[in-house]
Length: 507
Image (cartoon, rainbow, N blue to C red; front, side, top):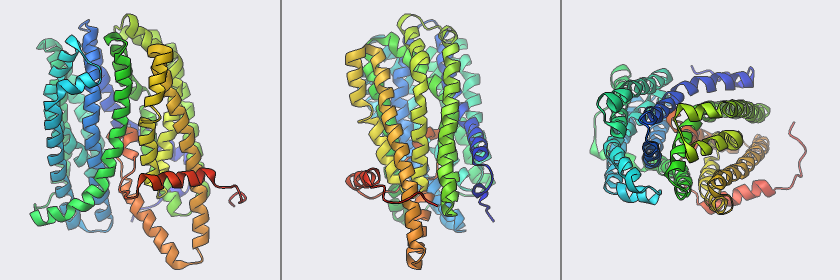
């Protein structure tokens, strides 16, 4: 029988243990991405780093769709496993995998046909665009592989085998790290060699996760067309909003890349290094967003609202201390970072500026991750949809645009940071107000049994939908399964923010 271990003991200890464990698998993939840039930098051409930056923006978008699909699979399978409906779990797993395969093949085909146009859209041109095209023409056809791999990893976590799911990503990262220098240097393939190594890594993750699902856990059933069509509705009820939410982040990233591209490929090369350095440096914060969810969820289920509030507070404190520490380290080693990646001129200046003045503001992105995870587990996953999409659009586009106009390329980074500050602070404020609201609703409902049952049912529904993928960092924690209109969401948030303080502090 499962034990709710987070409803007692030190909240901070739970956060540290959960975050550090999850960070291992996440960091493996991020480190490999950073190694790609490092190996290519040894070739002495900044155009290569810039090309990876442009290509990475497109690749980020495609894999985010896979993350949304994996969230749906994990939510449906874990729900069936929890209800001890093994055959239903097998059926939903297979049908979700088929949906993932068909969707990813379609996305890969469309992206492949429009690679030149997409690269132009994010600002690539000339030789840099040609290099990025060569990279993407090798990498994009393997999109179905990584999407299926992420879905299978989600299935492993759904049955409680988080260790094997983590091992699949670690093995994939190891394969990439080994074959990167072989294809880049030994076979003189350059950026295309890096793409080939990445494809091989995707094969490895797929093989390990697939063997775990099919052989170790025997979770793959027989395909039935009638059942497939029946399951499309519940699958897309979760996958649709999840994909929408997850693609918001790469769209915001594309906006920043496009703004930086206006100032030249050298700056884009520096941005490409930062794009790989940030997740490696702050991998623990990406892991925190997945770690805080179960802690909040269990204490909410136990009606321990004081511990729910403490979970938010401790997570924010942990985020602040970690980001400040890493930012100080980046500041002290900024020149060494530039030297390691052999960045010159404008690329070096951008990296130094980020490490000196911008890195510290990642704390606000981190606390928004925490807020989004709490929304998912407090029965309001739609709030995390609104905040994530909002941050990637109105929290990015105008600030980056005016930042570029007033402060040049450095203004782009400052504008992005300002948007993060606003949405981070607002997200945490709403999260605390939501805790107060659900506590009041719980107290009021205790005298009416049917209402209690209804609230519990709604909680179980939302909690099951907040299944998370460690590949997605903050994106994996976004809203899923919400069928209400965005205007209703906005009204509810406005109601939380504008509510009068007519109650005393919760006892």
